Length: 231
Image 1: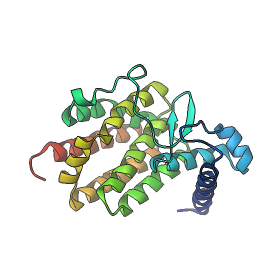
Image 2: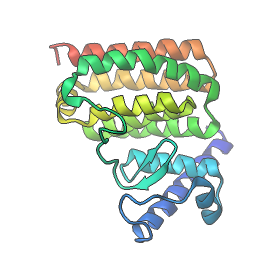
Image 3: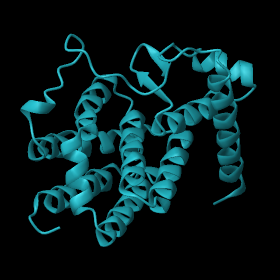
Image 4: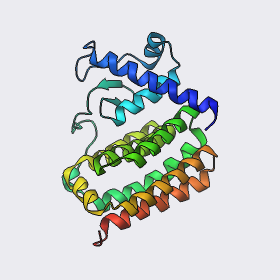
């Protein structure tokens, strides 16, 4: 990692700590809206890209959540309302979820290869490191989900991101967690980590064709492992 990247990571971590203190100070009530990225950048005297990366970290940790077009809010994401985006978690199953992911996420990766910023890629690398260091399935899943969301955000398409968010929310349901606990072996985690690293490298190299292929191969492997009767 070059010196510029190291400084960027340090700035992001500093911003994350400052934002945590701001949230925990009681200045913001649970589910209240945070100041805009621009206002937070001015308040903390940091760049907007650094603030954006810090907010992504806090979102991955469940301390804030973001709504496309509305802003960032304190606390965990509340259940989706029926009048905003249908979320038929009880009407679908993991097989259908993976089918939809295989349809939309390779295209998302393609767009991310064209549009990801340096800050986007830096955060993706953090997700990789945190996921690989995770000691339990729930922590690994948190950073795995954060990585895929980071790629979706980097794609720069608000409608695709809303669709991704609706599909991704189903992963928080109990049936999904039990399935991952039963099928996510150490060997599979290692394989997924390699696939993730190759994918992020392709995004950084702006290789859209390879991104699309790598995302499809990764999700196909996840689908086959999850839905196989062999744990």
